[in-house]
Image (cartoon, helix red, strand yellow):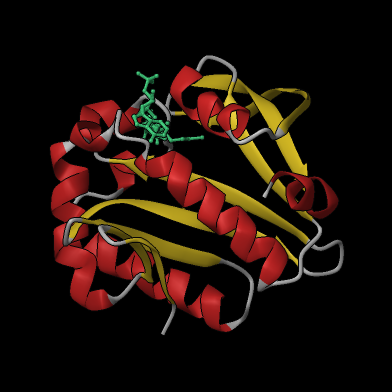
Amino acid sequence: MFLYQIRNDLALKLVSIQDADETFQLVDKNRAYLRKWLPWVDSSKTVEDTKASFLSFLKSYAEQKSLTTLIVYQGKIVGVASFNKIDWTNKIAYMGYWLGSEYQGKGIMTDVAKALTTYAFNELNLNRVEIHAAVENKKSRAIPERLGFIEEGTVRQTEWLYDHYVDHVIYGMLKSEWEQKI
Ligand SMILES: CC(C)(COP(=O)(O)OP(=O)(O)OC[C@H]1O[C@@H](n2cnc3c(N)ncnc32)[C@H](O)[C@@H]1OP(=O)(O)O)[C@@H](O)C(=O)NCCC(=O)NCCS
């Protein structure tokens, strides 16, 4: 079972059906805020939807296609961080994340993204980590920027968010660059 202790009070653990209820409550409490940047919020209406998503994440993990983890801070589930896709041919992991709004502003996600990047290079032996963020999503963009990822370009109208398209900025980190930083 995947469990990654980042600090005394902060860990990542693989999604599990037992945690679906607590995670759904967090989503439900944060709907309006999460919806601004995440496309799946409206389709997550009940705990059964969360369980179905978790089952699909677990299947994908078993097939080594992705890794979806719950962020546990001071014993509570406070968000999700994942490699939404792992491209083994080209050795690239694509990272995504969200936090409950009240857990923002503490550096939690920066530490989580740092830990996942190290995990991608040292444990999964990948060569590149990518983070995509909407151009206007300043808080999300600040995470790769704080960690020294390179802003590599913008792709236009690449995501449909309920009623409009958004452009994304792509950030990349290479294994060779990360080794210079750590
Ligand atoms: C994107 C998201 C995870 C960013 O959360 P965040 O709290 O800003 O990020 P962190 O946990 O890394 O915290 C950084 C903040 O904590 C502060 N901070 C405090 N202690 C810190 C520490 N030890 N290290 C780094 N930052 C620290 C930083 O100054 C920063 O605050 P600021 O924005 O006021 O400057 C969050 O806004 C979110 O979930 N948004 C909705 C979903 C979303 O947009 N997901 C991304 C889609 S691409």
